[in-house]
Amino acid sequence: MFEIVIKFLKFIFLVSIFYYLYNNNYFDFSLISNLVNNFALNITLIFLTIITIILGGYRWYLILKSFDVKITLRKTLKIQYIASFFNNVLFGTIGGDILKVHYVIKHSNNNKLRNNLTILIDRVFGLIGLFILGFISILIILIDNNQINLIYYIFLFILFLFSIFLIIFKLIQNKKYFFETKNFILRTYKNLFQALVLSVVIFFIVHYSTFIISKFIFNFEISLIQIFFSNFISTFVSALPLTPGGIGLGEITFVFTNKYFFNVLLNNLANVIIYLRIIDFIVSLPSLYFYIFYKNK
Image (cartoon, rainbow, N blue to C red; front, top):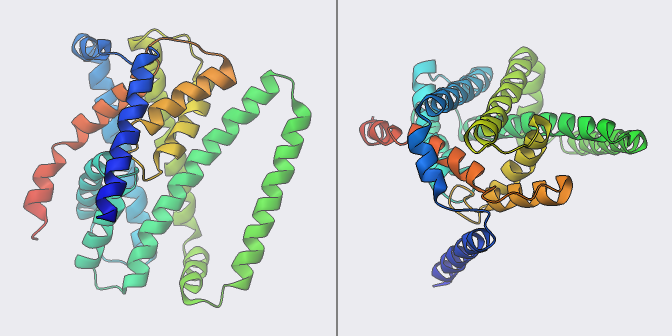
């Protein structure tokens, strides 16, 4: 009964977000005509989305190799593709990770701890890539606004957080979970670097796809750096498990970030993120075939 109430409240929350967006002219159905009338750009966006899925699968494959989890690259890419669909429909944007846990346990002989760690570390590297681009966009924005002193304090704050992380890691390194992680880092730093680069490239493509939609489909005058920063915040918020695939959360965060940070007051601004979601969904939908065919293998 409690779970039903929670799901109902989440549904009401989602409806309320879109009611607010529609009522304040941040969202309308003109995006449907844009979908139909921009064939060439849609093909470009679909291609870029496919590239991010492939790169994401290869990043996870590098991590699997580092833990000696014996899953082929082809099988890893299939699982990643299937997971991309469930990321779009389950609560938060990490629903596909649950599926990846199931498949990696099913298709490897490694212990459960290592299997779960590969998915956790893959997710962590995704967040690191997101934060690197977000941090770069913040620095550029601050420099453009001559707020050099603030940059200094941001660096100090990051150093403080990093120091806290090192202290915590040192204190709990005797625990089994973190012992595995420590050995993994020491053993596979080259793969880690490649995974980090891939994470940055993946989110660069995602942010640039958002810029293409904003600039060339809806003709919004929003700079690439503004898109990078807005998308950084909205992507992070979308991971909260409040709505399926973070729907609504990403849209309203994107609108508010542009409104309150950059004073961008544009009608139908939420259409940019909705458009990107539709492209993601179109690309991931055929993976249901692989899910049905592959789940019993």
